Length: 239
Image 1 (cartoon, rainbow, N blue to C red):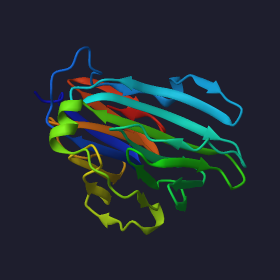
Image 2: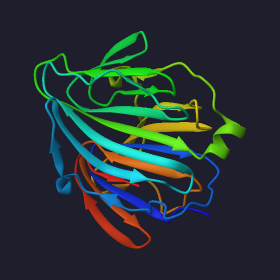
Image 3: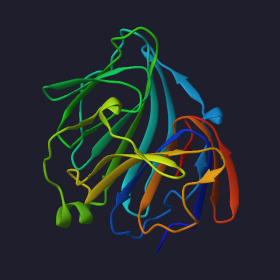
Image 4: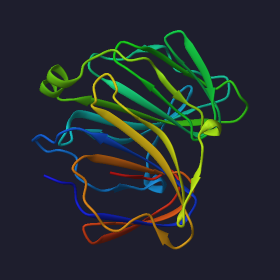
C-alpha cells in the first residue's frame, strides 16, 4: 500500500518535514492522510503554559503516533519524565529557546532545532530565556512485531541546532538535511527542511510507501492530497 498522491506548492520560506521509513502493516482505523490547521487548534491552559493536542492514534506502520504543541512560559519547565519502553520522541523547537536535557546531556536550542530521545531516556525541557517557548513533541511507537524483529536497540540522544545546519541552495529555493539514521525503534528517521521561492512547487505529485509529516515553519503552503487542495499557515501540520 502507498500513501495518497500529494503535491506541495509554497509562497514563503520554510517547512519542516520528516519521513518515518517502515514497512507498512495493516492497522485498525489508522489515521488517514490529511491536514491540521494551526489556526483551528484548541489550546488547553496549564500551570506552566499550554498544550495543543494535534494528532493521536495508530497509523499503518505505528502502534501509536502522538503529536502535541507545548508552550512553556519563561522560567518554567516540564517534569523530568522517562521515555516509555519501545517509544521514541522527537522534539522540534517552534518558537523561542529550549534547554533540552536528555539523561546527562543538556543543550540550549533555538527555533528550528531538534532533539531525539529514545526508550529509557530521562527528558526535561526548560524555558530559561525571556518570552514564550513553543515546541512540538512527536512520540512514535512501532508495532511490537516490527520492534522485536527489526530494531529495539539503545541509541545515543540526538541534538541538532538550526544555526549549525548547512544550507544547500537550489533553483526552487534550498534544503537543509538534519537527520537520516535509525532510532531505537525505527529503521530510519529522516528529517529535512525545504525553502521554496514564492509560487514554486517542491516537486511533482507523487506517492509515499512510508509516512511523512510536514510542519509549516514560515510562509504559506498550498498542499494537494488526492486532488483536494488546502492552504495552510505557520505551525500547521500535514500528514
